Length: 185
Length: 185
Image 1 (tube, rainbow over the protein chains, first blue to last red):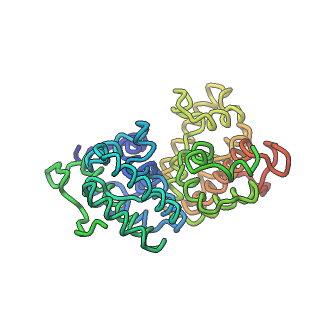
Image 2 (image 1 turned 180 degrees about the vertical axis):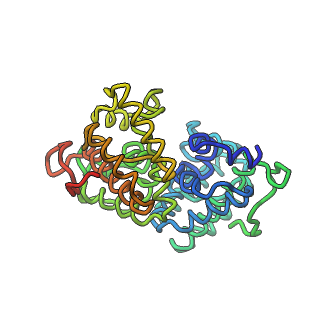
Image 3 (image 1 turned 120 degrees about the vertical axis):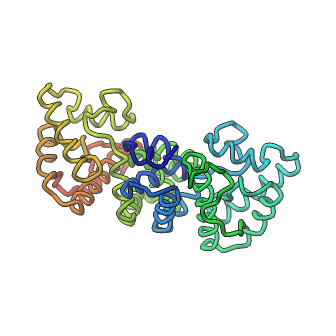
């Protein structure tokens, strides 16, 4: 899809296509509608990031809470969104050994108990070993640090979802990262 | 439902029950989850209102954009949320004469063209005559005034949806308004 097509959408079409680029938070797409026409994917992504950054703390936590656990109950019951299902599969979450699965469940539980929201990481940019290590490391952080870390991951997930939908500089390339920072955890 | 039952819910149950107390904006419920346990419905409502007030302008507009037109296309196609359908019916939106229906469509269109979001009013606290008059009057307002007016209506809608779900001071009473201001338009 070209950005010109996005800019020609009516509001309902826009929400139908971009409503889940931030998991279960269609308010993000609803908010950035005001900034049309978008110059390119980066512009659209920048506005979503700015909206996320401008949310009060409760809202940023709410965005994180709207994400599913990695290889959690929703995944096991086949209740993930289409996007999350594909992303978790890409990170090898469907191929965990029984021990890895148990370890991850315990870490997820500990993380949620400490912070009140799930561990969020851009699964498509990490494999299961990096995810397990990242989870262990991030468990030691403070709440404030984890809200920021989690939000940065939400932005990466969003950038990849956008690039699945809209061509960027003539290419539709899932490996193109809009905001590469080289530091996933 | 008693507030004690609400406070005993896990996150998924909470979102399943309260996710649409602000139309299509489950982020509101996701955000206020951090303030549990809630003392009563008023406390829950106050936290949602505070979250709405703390949203950046784009977010407050996004909340308004997440609402359907009164007697609009979604209503005609039977695609309203269950809550909106009941509310619009209560305001007599299902009993418009052909002329009223045309007048309302023109007013809705004019409002959306001017402000970039639909006209939002607490339908259960207004009948169709008051809604038509309110729409005509509010069309003359500035964008800033209408964002605030619209948000006040969202809060009233939310309070009634909450009172449909949770008992307040021993009574479950749809006529009880948490934040009565006596001024609907």
